[in-house]
Length: 114
Image: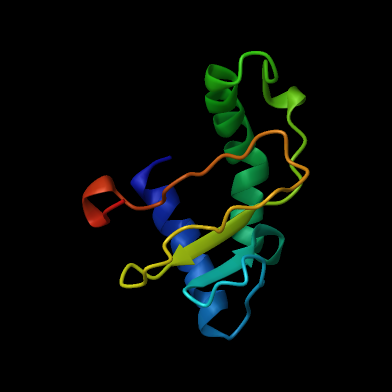
């Protein structure tokens, strides 16, 4: 993802979070999260550019499962903001119905630890 794309995704999610909107999935109070279908600009980007880009990455690492974008069925897309000062900077161990999960940091590596 480009720095501009990441900035656009972060900005739209930040505006929604600032309005008080939040999707509670992890049940961890150090995490704020929104679902992408509540973010029109992000959803448009995800459908047009995100899926093909992420499918290529998934195909590279999950050779037996993904050959290309047509092989992916997206169940849920979350944007999660972790509080860096919290001891809980990850989703808790859990099981779900996903075959694979992709985690895409939206900040440059120098902007966070972990």
